Length: 74
Image (tube, rainbow, N blue to C red):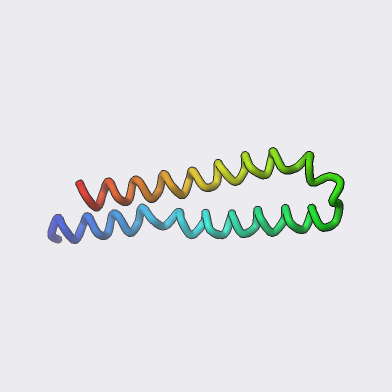
């Protein structure tokens, strides 16, 4: 196997966690919106936790993307 082909395979495998991040963000937003519509008065208390969970989930995706770029361009 050529080294260039191995880099492409490695970068492709490093991007696989992005599927999980997309699914996780969809579930996160969906459940937050469902909870906010059911009980609008509790939305203020949940917003901080929502943004923390969003940031951690998105950071996982960004780390996976950075690793894929490092594999691809180094």
